[in-house]
Image (tube, rainbow, N blue to C red):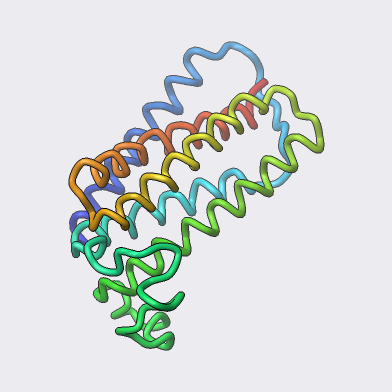
Length: 183
């Protein structure tokens, strides 16, 4: 699962660079930062981490255990492990912990997105309304597909759609960051 995640990470980095360069080439207006903070970049970083952890889930077939949501079995934390194991490097070899991390990282990404959308709408940054809404729709799609993947025991069609929509998620994140940089 480690080699799978490295392979996937490089594919997404290449995709991101190609998309970023495409956006720059097709944009003739000047550079002007419209968001002061670096929250969009942090969100993109978390999405990349989430994709790596998602590759761990896929590579270990961790999506086939704990086929309940929002709980993992009968509790929030997996019954077959201890919380202290989360702080060990071996956590990345434990399917239940990897699934737990993947789920909770999704919650964090959603929370950061909600902060971003509130900021964009509160500051009335109209040029970011479309990109932030697109990003939100794709995050929502990812969440729904992720939940369905868990509930179906990682059924191949739903799991494949969940993996495919991660391409859309990275692309919409890159587009949002681009729009925060260029007017």
